[in-house]
Image (tube, rainbow, N blue to C red; front, side):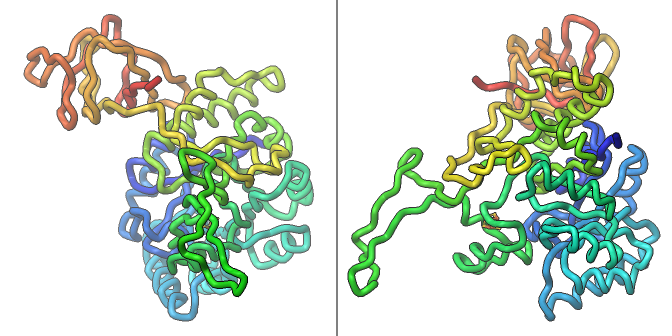
Length: 413
Ligand code: SF4
C-alpha cells in the first residue's frame, strides 16, 4: 500500500508555511489570474524562490495551478507567463492544467515540467485516462462525482497517478461545466471569476398565462431563517472513509480552499495528517481520536457529506447556509523564552482565567487545552487581559509546551 501525499491549498505565504508545519506533503498555489481563484491574493513569479525555499526546508512539493480555460485573448498571457517562468532559476514540481492549448504551450516552453490534469477537465473513463497519459500527463485529479469503486478502478488501471479531493467546498455542478456565474453576474467560473451564485438564497417568481413575469407575485421559499439555498452543496469531509480511499491506492489526497484562512488550513491538515499516519502505523484497528473530528466540526463549514466516494448521492440536495466557526484564534506564538514565558501576537482579547485551546505548529502534536497564570506587557507589567494587535508575554503554571507558530484559540459554545 502506498502512503498517499497530503496536498494542501496555499493562498499566501502564511498559509504555505503553516500547511507544511501542520503536516502537508505538498501545496498547490496560483500565480496572477491564470488559475481558478482569480480574486485570491495569489503569488507572483518573483515569489517563487522564497516559495521553493520554504518547501525545500520541509522536503515538500509545490504544484502551480494553471487551470483556467483561456480564450484567444488570454492565451498570449499564458505564453508570456510560461516564458517568464522558464527564465526563473527555480521552478515548481508540477503544473496543474486543464486546457489542451495550455498543455501544448507547457510542452513547448518548459518540456521537462511534470503536468497534473485538473478536475476541471473531467476525466470520466479509462479511454480518457489513456488519452491524457498519451499527452504527457503524469497525474489526474478525478471528478468529485466519482464513487469509491470508480476511484479504485481508475487507480488499478495504473495509467497515471490519481489524485482525489477529500475535504472542502463543492460545486452543485460538475466541475468545469458550470455557467451559473457567467449567466447571473457575468463572472465566468472557467476563468476563475465565479461569484458562487449557487450559494445565494432563491425565491420562486410567478408568470402569467402569457409567460410574463408577475413581479408582485413572487413566492417566498423558506428553508432556513426565511431563506432557501436550493443549489447550495454540502461540504466534503471524508475523514471517516479515509482508510477506504487509502486502500483504493490513490496517490494524493487534496484539501480544497485557497481562499481559506491560515487557521482553517492548519486545522484541516493536522486532522488529515493524524488520520493518514494513524492508519499506516496501526492499520485497521486505528480509531482517529475524537479531538480531530471535533477540530473539523468546529471550523466554518456547511453541513458535511462524505460525497459520492462515501456513497452519499444526495449530497447535492437542498442544503443550508454556512455554520459559523466555533473557534476564534486569539493569538499566535512569536517567541518562547525561559521560565515558561511565551511572546504572543494578540489577534483577539483573552484573559488569564480562561481555558484556551492550542493548535500546535507541529504535525505530531494534537491540539490541547491550556490556561495562563499571567499576562504581562513586554516590560513585565501585569495586564488584566491581552489586547488585540498588541504583543504580550504569557506564562503558564508548568513548563510551557508552546512553540513558535502555535495558535492560541477560544472554542465558543
Ligand atoms: S456557481 Fe457554484 S456550482 Fe457553479 S462553479 Fe461557482 S461554486 Fe461551482
